[in-house]
Image (cartoon, rainbow, N blue to C red; front, side, top):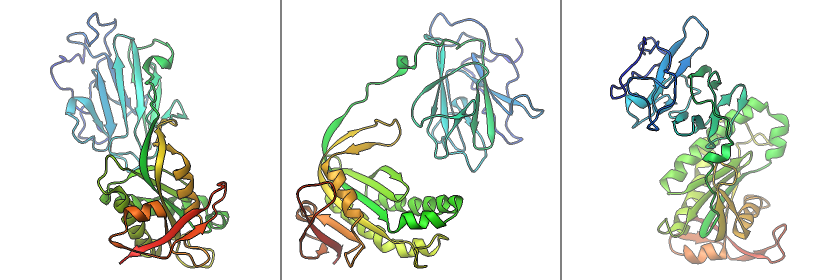
Amino acid sequence: MAGDAEPDQPGPAAESTAEGRTEEGAPEEGPSPTGTEDAGSIPALLVIAPDLAEERSTPLYDWVAVGRECAGVEERHRLLIEDPAISRTHLEVRLDFAGDQAWLTDHSTNGTRLNGKRIERSIPVTIKPGDRIRLGQVELQFRSRRFSATSAAAAMATLREINVTDMVLVVGDILSFSTIAESADDRVLLENIDRLYAELRQILARHHGTLSNYVGDAFFATWETDAVPEAAKEAVTFAIESAESLPRIAAGLQVRDPDGGPLRMGWGVASGPAAVSQLTGMLVTVLGDATNVAFRLSGLAGREGRPDVLVTDAVHRATSMGFAFTPASAIQVKGRSQTVETLGARRL
């Protein structure tokens, strides 16, 4: 059959540029008796720009990563596409020979659509021959004479663990965000908040934290005390450095505070046990009293004369060296019967 390739010969990575070579052969028919690809066959193809004059295809032997770079992935297992809206490693497609299924998993920043519908990040979904995958401005089509089984997605499901672990949690909250969002253009608001949070992620990486989630006006990061030495110190340093960096970052943003000044954020730092899982299938979900306290403190910090960074007394006790703290005060936070001993924090 035209276009057949030996499985031990790397298939070229098709690209959206003129340099990318393609495989033109149709996929072979029939299941593999060994659970892997038949010798001398191409089990499936990913086709760029399907049904158009510039249609191009790349062979899919067992799995392939698709993105701008796909660092560390050998040529046989990558499809590189130049598009600034596509992530470095945007998605992957895997073939399940034993189950006669193919699976698509999104790992991107901007998302992936399957047959026009956005799929959840990090959740494998089955795809069938003829299905169309859109990433950025590029459309792919999955083609094969196999992998059409329609068994329940639960066959690939992994039991989600919920662990309770001691953590330090930091939440950053944009002041007056509701008022800002009411008057700002939605696209401009999104682009500016994305730029702000990209800078915060760089600071977070330097201090060994994990981004749990960010939604609208809230940036939520965590440190597991068992995994990160001096987790409390790293968390407080991150919060202080972020607060210090915000005027510089905000000066370059179009979105402004309701009074016309640069954006401001309040930061809350708390510690304690938290339940950890990936219930959403996306970013890590962290729940518990300490999480609630961190969110509530972030909504108070930087307001009514309070410092931009507020920490609980437990965090203060774990980080008393290296920072300057205001005197402790008991704050009543919403939804909690007991007050929280809180201190402002800054560099010495």
